[in-house]
Image (cartoon, rainbow, N blue to C red; front, top):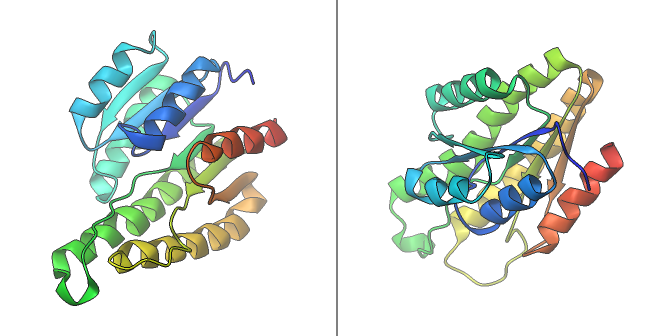
Length: 197
């Protein structure tokens, strides 16, 4: 798939599937705005990308951080065609032992971060008249324990994604939830973007 000329913003792109997504989109010719809270993870990603991946270090759980991120990407790239909300934290702590800070951090990153990104990028896409937002949901059907906060946040993200899709559709913005695990997420996202092309 040729994505030359497209600007794709990915949160949580420093490692794991987010990193693989950034690399895959760069190989397809897209300009990738890779966000992570850790500069260490992004440095090596950018080095191997021949200028197609740009690093943006911000905490998406904070409104000021999100606003700075969006402004930097707009200044550098001129537009945002695709947003992929991939950033997530996943503590493995039993419910009866979970610290309130851990609970809030999970919701702040996994849910509030996605909300802030959808809202801010949605405004950019509304002005453009088009855009695609993809929310990555994992583990929402897990049966094992010790991840109550994470699974709760993923169910809430699915609901947020659904409602955002209904609200943003009239502005030419499509919102999707991708739930597959592992490498199938990359294939599914490429498939969705091919359908949008």
